[in-house]
Image 1 (cartoon, rainbow, N blue to C red):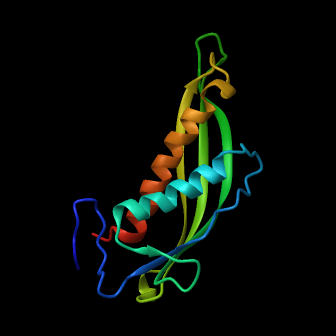
Image 2 (image 1 turned 180 degrees about the vertical axis):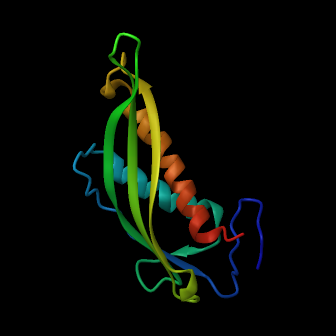
Length: 149
């Protein structure tokens, strides 16, 4: 194993390529920029934090999945009985295949949440909060797939 300060633990003598499929948005509620932003950031994370070459097919590692949920719910109630905070949640289903060691294969869901005050409109905070959730999800997926401590 070779360990790097960025958290990746990849044996580059065995693992040289990664295939990252675009994740379609299959959530009931859809915000247009979410899927392209997520897909680009996931690919960028692996490009900037590993030496793996990204390929279209037959990768040593393969990541695929879909965005399965994008929801909002009341998180807290004010003394007057009204919603004080709303929580946004984004969930992605990930299928990871390690073609060099199938014991590391998994299918798992990852979720990230962010809250905002109900005095703000979703439209006003959505871009920032979705970006924060994508940052969190990309880190979770990166750590689960190539940071095997």
